Image (cartoon, rainbow, N blue to C red; front, side, top):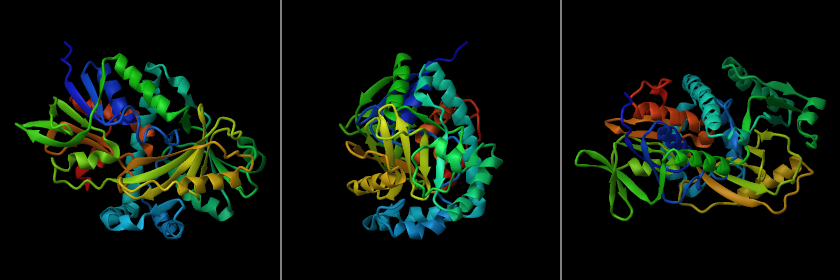
Length: 416
């Protein structure tokens, strides 16, 4: 006999929220997704479109600590911290520094690898059920190096990926030129990852996943949630209009805003920050781009989409309130022109999104300690699209009372 479905509220209509809605609605639950803007209107809208299942190395690492001082000298470089935001950021930076220890890096890689394996399987299955597999490109990625020293410095990271079963091929000369014609001669080598995938457009993909969820009965409500509280023993959403909403299960998938929502219902530290990412989407035909190319030394990528050529990435730590600095977008676009001289840079659309980032590069996944009716699913940094189907599967396991398919201990909120 099938158990009756539960009444579920999901806070956040990004790719993680809509993916969770899809799996829960499939399973027969009554699902309502609440968001103040709309489906995929925040970080899921303009990101770099990667299904980066091989991206298992954490941002927090000894390598980043060596690079960071040089990067921080350039306000438009791969890593930037707004000076006015530094005092508020300091506690997160301390945890980030602690996460750079070798033992913690290895633990993070193991946990990230387990989540990525699940993500690859679950994404393929969800996209097939939703009949949107055609929105996934299987062209691989190409990471580029401007010097032999930069290439050699990358090798330990590739060895770690190889240890976790990730295939790649270091390339030079004619093979490099074949993988991406028109590159500047400054690039001496590259690494091709055949299993890397991208999507035709992340916004359109999220909309398609939502359409599948909606076909299974999920509903969307545009409204603003201020916080969570317990009222008469129940977890309740306190809405901006003064009303309250409760359900058998509440899923917090609010991205960069999740810590604010939870601050009144738990005293646990939630070291959630925002990797503000910038992109420029150029018109179709701006360049002959064969696959996603990664300029690791400069912290940005270029992606071919069905809707144009997207140039973007980098990390700016500046919180949720400060105005965007689109000079960062322009700086990346200028570099892209140097790296691919045939690139036409006119007619682009600039965008900035808030990536929800934890100090150890692992998301928060699991029940809120002390609250069995609240499920947490946020903090994936720049890997939200990549890990969305895995997060949805784990949310569904928790809602239905099944043992999660992977160990959730590394992702628990109380790990901090």
